[in-house]
Length: 393
Image (cartoon, rainbow, N blue to C red; front, side, top):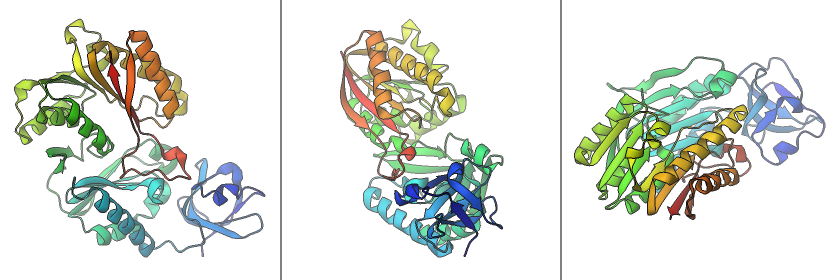
């Protein structure tokens, strides 16, 4: 059906374990006309069909598997995956919000594709050459399965540089949309999402549970929201009765979006102080004072494995400074979104930060991927999200 990628002897074990990646060292040969981004059938050294996926001879990951059998990858294949994912999210989140991650790459059996739902529209991120070549199939299937008002592509992640080999894309793929913004609802709040110019695909959907906890803890407290972006935590804290929220971010457009979100929810901007600047510099300013709740949600300090040592120091420093700003009896809610920091290492870094800050801390809760960001049990590399809620004394 498709060109053959033949594995070396004994290298079919990863497929037996249902891992969706086949690395270059496992490949004996790829038969013509196997092309970059094209569909292939993976066979064992004994020429037994094992899986179907897409191929890239320029990537260390030579094949990303779509189905663990010899299968026809057509519009119907994608329609079934999209409908299954939609039904799952609607069952788990439908009454709570109209914004969720519909497709989480390998976690939903579609490596290289991320789809986020924002109210009546979808924003997609295409991360691999293979998924780019398959766009005519999955785009039509996505339209038929979900029937969104629009589908917008926002493809900018680092994987595109190494695997897809093309420039970032921001383009309307289907439907109509006059502006690159949409309003979503979550947790009794409304948020303006800038999916064209904002960070990621426009909103941090993976922080839903954290925003819920901030709402529980914020009442009558002074709250510090570091790396605040468009103010998801800020809005939730003020809605639930925070005395004051100080939001710090280096991006002026992000803070302007935060102000719009306050107005959208009818919140008093007098209780909100939006500070444009470097978070580390702000935390070292003595006039910052103490806070009953400190939220630390930095960007990924390590986008490559070679950056982990430097990133570890940055995570420790920002958490040490955050502990110093937490009032006795207060809370620190801290996160890492780096693939290269396993949970236990993150805990050790936060432990060292508390030690250097001279503070006692108790872990009250741990956070991982929310239900709309599934991690396939056979693909632990898909896990990136981790967080801790700590009580500080």
